Image (cartoon, rainbow, N blue to C red; front, side):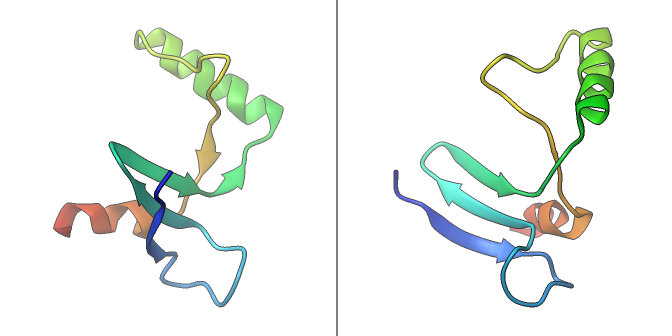
Length: 73
């Protein structure tokens, strides 16, 4: 896997920050792990919209400025 760092949270210092990496065919997002209850809520909203979270997937929180920068990229 060829991983390329793109950027991190604009308000972070060093280390442990929300960040975005690019890999062939997609992106890797680093964010905060959600609680079990939060994941269940995301799953329920997803399933109500014909989506959801597969067994090999997870959900996480990432600050908006990390992903918003993709609009201009």
